[in-house]
Image 1 (cartoon, helix red, strand yellow):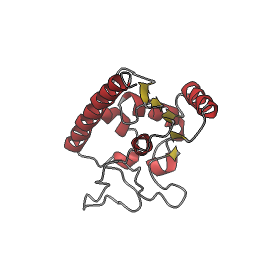
Image 2 (image 1 turned 90 degrees about the vertical axis):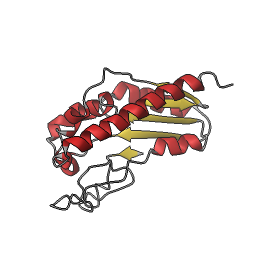
Image 3 (image 1 turned 135 degrees about the horizontal axis):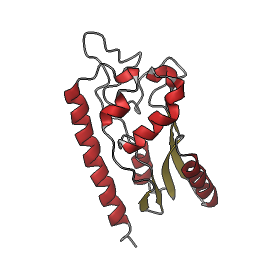
Length: 176
């Protein structure tokens, strides 16, 4: 799954992958504060719930990790799923030269964690030093309107999800 957090090829429209606070052409900000209110769906978690043999998240910012996961997926029999995170300069209202930097910030801010689940065993494949969510969001025009309080609220949610991910990783290692 190529994840640029919206339907970019058809006019930058909101999708189930669009995060809270994002501007899209179908969630315009204006004076109404009509930005995206629903949380981004975790498609990887949906696949994990279906117990497919291999599920992973990857990012264009970490090509070695992406290649390793693709090679692993190719070696596994059955259904495989890899969600690949890739910024869209046009839709995200950002300088194309920042693509890798923004993709790295998504991982370090925990907005897009990198992990894999093989036969039910989860491994977080990158545990970088945490950076503030606002650093990631402020590089993108699609979040320029977000109030500080909403950013702080979203950061708390991401921190809780990270703790849950760590817990899931630990628990899955004890699964027969």
